[in-house]
Image (cartoon, rainbow, N blue to C red; front, side):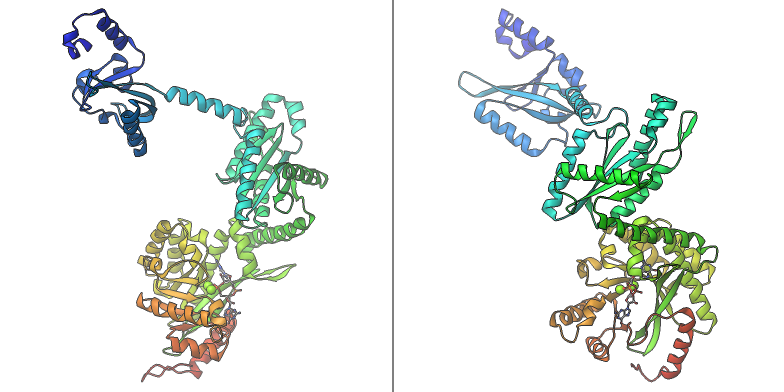
Length: 585
Ligand code: C2E
Ligand code: MG
Ligand code: MG
């Protein structure tokens, strides 16, 4: 091939040498002319790229290019060739069969006697194998070969990185040290192979219970360390620890055996329990021994104060689980209250908001501000939310049967409910069961929920809106959403948060926010609802701003189902709707 390129050279020893080197080199080689057209390639080139000499002759080497190489690399390449006459670097190319592979490329410029570019000589080899070897080696040095979890050294590096992030962001993180109870007995009596099988199964349970962003590692033996970075609040650790406890204490089928083991867990938190990897690991270890001494199969925080708070939370969680399980059996720990919404234009009560209430058998009434977050963290919001929706529909049917007409019921939805694919069918099922029209149902989602994962949120909201359900944004003004973004959501109402309504008469900023929101909301075709209206002053102010609907203690506190019906009937008697024009109260 080289002979064709240099006919003038004929068969000199030098050309024979060059030809042999070119043909037999294990590196792929490619020669291009001054216009960068391919003039010769060797056999290694064909093996690596899949292109024969005939495929590529006369073409631009760009045909080898994949999109995976950053544009800057090519810029650097041409600059190197111009200034140094050669360039070496890594680029990603595409073989004829479409495979994308990394290669180490060297290009040299060949100039003629006058210094003009004559050829470019490129040689390269495939880095895939070397990459894979390096990755395999890195994997082996970072992982426990048995469970494939991170090993201690890798975990300590991750913990250090998480600590640095938490320090920078003023965040919190938790280190959980988990020791399996009775593991030694299992290992000693059934043998190492069964013991290993159990450890592998435990590692899998840990993965199943945790998020991908959590760090899971095995220290050795039957000890595991979990790092929970970016914690929203200290108490959510309790939820995760109790989930791990439930997940790990379940039976393990290993070989022909069914094994049982339970975890003893110690928890240390940054910043309260320490700010270095060593202190956190040591304190988690001490807390783990405390858990062992408390009778195993439990978790303990290093800081004693946290244990008290965690116990209270566990009581709420256990209580809620129990109450929800027996809700179907007629337990009435949960019930709904209803707060009326007044339409200022007509003076009519046009809606009621359903608000969940829980009376714990020992702890008494518990505010939804307290139990809804626990329900969200434990996943119990799913059954609770379903119950709230069905119960709201059941009650609305009962109000209608008692002669209350033209009223809509608003139900609060949490983020998780909105993301669950069963939502439209729950809504549809309950409406059909109680023979309600979609326009009689309103769903409230908070502003922050509407802002999460916008594409998915819009899709599900559109599905609900297409069904004819009325959608409202709750607690508006507390998040960061812009009205411009809201324009893309298929919503019908905005509920101004009561924090703004509270000082509307005295705080100029709050008044300005309310006023601007009402104007802009109206321009977007939305109805405006003000929450937490307590005084006549607030009412008058909101009325002047053109607010459509008011809700708050001024009209009524949330009422039980039994109290609501007489309230609504009395309201209608006291405020007959005047056909000659809208009236307000
Ligand atoms: P929210 O949806 O913004 O509900 C309005 C809250 O404001 C209710 O508190 C209500 O009692 C209170 N409120 C109404 N008028 C006034 C007033 O004039 N002044 C004052 N100071 N407060 C007033 P509640 O019932 O304690 O509910 C608190 C939050 O709990 C609700 O806020 C809602 O986010 C959540 N929640 C309640 N029930 C449910 C439910 O079934 N599911 C979900 N996901 N969340 C719920
Ligand atoms: Mg609400
Ligand atoms: Mg609200």
